[in-house]
Length: 269
Length: 365
Figure 1 (tube, helix red, strand yellow):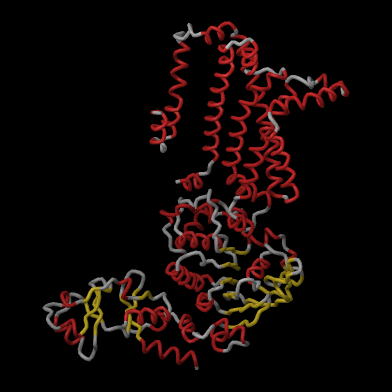
Figure 2 (spheres, rainbow over the protein chains, first blue to last red):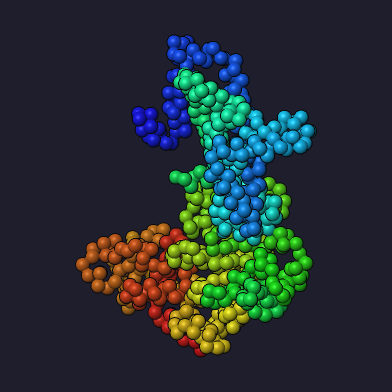
């Protein structure tokens, strides 16, 4: 509570704000570092599986990171397409919305069947490591999930551009490329990145479910813990996911701020 | 010079511009005016090919514009619009520099030009160059919009209600400034407006449009005094005599006014008031301070004490204003005459109701 009110008062100082927000995490980190919490059972669990923990953490980061990067690379062009073409608008959003409403577990499951038959039919796919279970369906599902916020924000950011600005740009003799590079891209960048931020934070959480279909990641500990009725193991998986989500959120906020042109930042005052 | 030949524009089944022909001479200000939906903006936007005509041809200095690449054509034509459309992520300087940069001027030339233009539109370069559009008032933004349109020194300027989005007082200042700039630069201007007073004040020739056609294309005086049909007659309205006054600049009618320095003696004052009802009082530096009338003189012991002080902004009128504004000011305050000052508040002379009467009779004849 104290931290929250303090944050509100420090609206104008981003660095202090971040420091305060992270003070709690930092305290726990310090205590961990100096072995003060060694008696906690979670820590005991961690010390017992240090190697596996690091492996699954890396796995987790690779899964969500790879998916979000791919989702961004696909989502931005899709959003641009939807914003530019009346024909594309409806189908793009229909797909993005429908996939978003399928529960993640169901989507992972749904992908198993077609992918395993594909990998059976085409041996070279199997050699690439594409199978019905494991990382492939997980990454595909995670990409699909990350698409909606990115596509939606890209679309909105382009559609909400001041028509007067675009008319002026065109009337002054900018060609298509110059319009995009000088006006559309810089003016829509903050909102697009805001979509990538939403997608990233979501993906960190969704990746936990991926462990169920053998993709690994921190979800592994959660489901193992659930199976063995071992709460400490669940926490060993869940806590780092929360911390990871916070870190990703903070990093993306920095990106969003960096991408906001100075003239636009003034507007929010 | 701009020439439109039998230009037609259809939107689906609807006709927006109907076989329109028009010629705008070099250095002339042509104002397109008419009710909304009359096709004036469409006509303007066809000149720089933001809209392609369905048929007909448009020539600039004898060259068919459809033969020029649209981007290149537009870079050679200044463009200012009502919403201004300043780029919010760029500074004022960068906004003005857009077209010069598109046509590859070198950096120092662009920087020099930006400064020159800011001065031209009456904004201090030091103060404004590094500001962002969000930090500007509506009037300042409009000025930057005009400066940006002039940046690469295009011979032609297209303006779509460039002074539309500001309050009446600011608009009047911007119009006065436009008149001054145009006298200096002599651009060929096509300006769209729905404000008849603006058209009368700025135009060399007015094209009154109705349903995609030009109803009348003539000088403001002729449009006002000899409307060709009922539509134009109704459009210019019944207060035509009054509107004609908008064509007359104060600086063309201002006469020397009886004035006295505030440091003058009472004897000087008495002789100044001999045969006059009042006298304007100015400070040592020539700024208008107020006036002294015979009635306010009675018990005064010095000129300084006798002067009726007034807010100069309220009692006087700028030399850049029009006779119409002077008249409205005089009627509003119940005075027979009004002092004329320059931008620094220095007394230049006065204008009286007699001058207004004389000029209306003259124009009406």
